Length: 121
Image 1 (cartoon, rainbow, N blue to C red):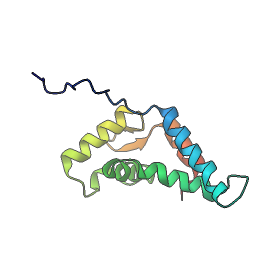
Image 2: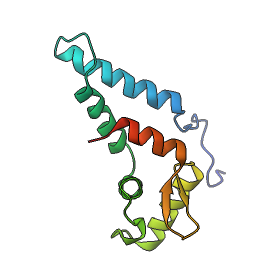
Image 3: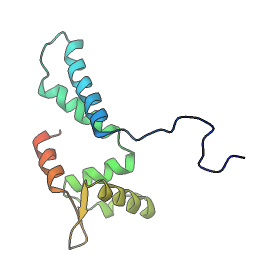
Image 4: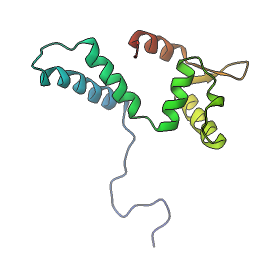
């Protein structure tokens, strides 16, 4: 008998480590210029990688992250309340956003620093 949540000898899928994701995005950044026969990664190539990274997020997480990063209130987004709160809790658990004393949200300091440096367009 198979109990819910067990597999039948299949390998369990592990979440991707930060290094796997960053290595994949770095490979994209190096691959785009090579398609154009260029030797160096340019700003436009990095911006493409940033967009790929954002596109890899679930739709709700991406919308919420961008709202917080842009200083908008994520609670005003047209996302069902339960899904919005769960996604915000997940982003908090991942140390990407934090709830402020005024019950709004902001990026964690290290994420805010990286986001500003990336200058995603």
